[in-house]
Length: 60
Image (cartoon, rainbow, N blue to C red; front, side, top):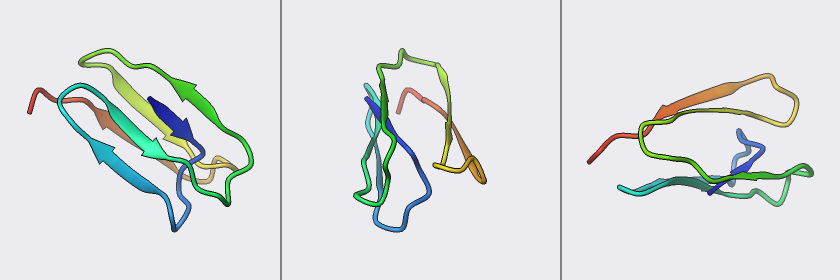
């Protein structure tokens, strides 16, 4: 599960072998959730799209 926006100071990023997910910041007003599949490339932008983060899920 992915909850965006990203880029807030109090936001946490976590990974494991099955999914990549974030904890929504209380500073963020807009939220979207996505279920992702293995080997997907994930692009997340913060609320004003000033920053983008890319993840490629690994098998570790």
